[in-house]
Image 1 (cartoon, one colour):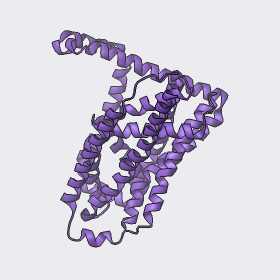
Image 2 (cartoon, one colour):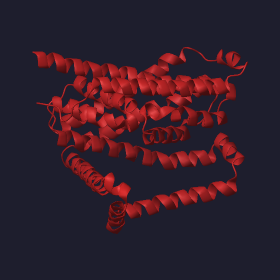
Image 3 (cartoon, helix red, strand yellow):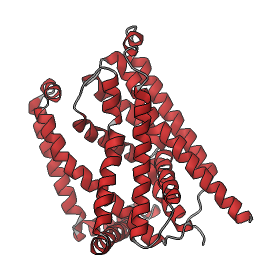
Image 4 (cartoon, helix red, strand yellow):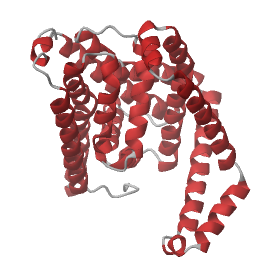
Amino acid sequence: MTAPVHIDPRRMLRWVLQGVALAGVATVGVFFFTVRPETWTQLRTFNPLWLPLLAAMVFTAWACNGARVWLFCRALGYPLPYRTALQASLSQEFGVAATPAGIGGAVIRLTLLHRAGVPVAQSGSMLASDAAIDVLFFCLLAPVAAWVMVHDSLFARVLEQMNGRAVLPVLTMAALGAVLLAALLRSAGFHRRIERLARATHFGRSRRLAARHRFLRRATSRTLRRMRDALALLWGRRKSALVLNFVLASVQWTCRYSLLPLILLAMGSRVNPVPLFLAQGLLFMLSMLVVVPGGGGAVEVLAALILPAFVPVPLVGAVVLIWRLLTYHLYLIGGGTAFFLAVRQRRLGGQQ
């Protein structure tokens, strides 16, 4: 059984080196602009015993993600070994971290599951279902985080430092903009106007924007349909699989997004972790919008702008360094090892 697409390990390696270089430059820049003479004194308060706990949180997140792939495969009638599911999920994490806008993650996971005997349509449905459960988790978390932010003393002080007259209109406009965008995307007339505009300009015709727009609409519709069908099938046949997948997703994201609060706690800053979950989620989404591997250093820079509200400025560079080592570089190492082992196994299998 052949893979649905060809994955070029050399291109992946070039992307990895590019992402590591950009992230490294950004981290060094943040450290350079925030380091102070008192930085080294304050770093002595960091207890190295926190590092095994932080690493254990990362490994638990990996184990939960692999268990989600394994669980859905078995629920749909494809009893994969847990090791294969874990290899696919880790390789997906590597693809997200290593490729521009994370586009390689889904491709790698679909390819590896296809090699393991799962049809592309089924693995695509499982991928869409995983995404739906992730969205559900964050939708349930968002109002809790908002309530905590309003009632937490630290976040209240941060909000007091901002111009309240400007914050409310900006939030209102953002909410109205999101509602308007959702309404337009559901409007057939809006899409027809986009295609007419694309055909009316030389740039649109040369880039075939109308055809690209139709392809994107069909791909989005197909993905949503697969998501709905897979969730309906699982709800009808294996409700327990959906519930357990949601529990695993909750543990996975809690472990991953607890890293920054724990690092701050190790640095002597006691903050409520719930709102920081959303902050990290937003940073991750922004990194996906930057079409450069690893977000092109944008995550490091934006984190450096947020962190002075929670830790002294001399510690910002150290916090960013430890946080990105755990949430980016460690994912590249673990996921990259799984990915290149999968590539090597495929080559050995082909030779036999």
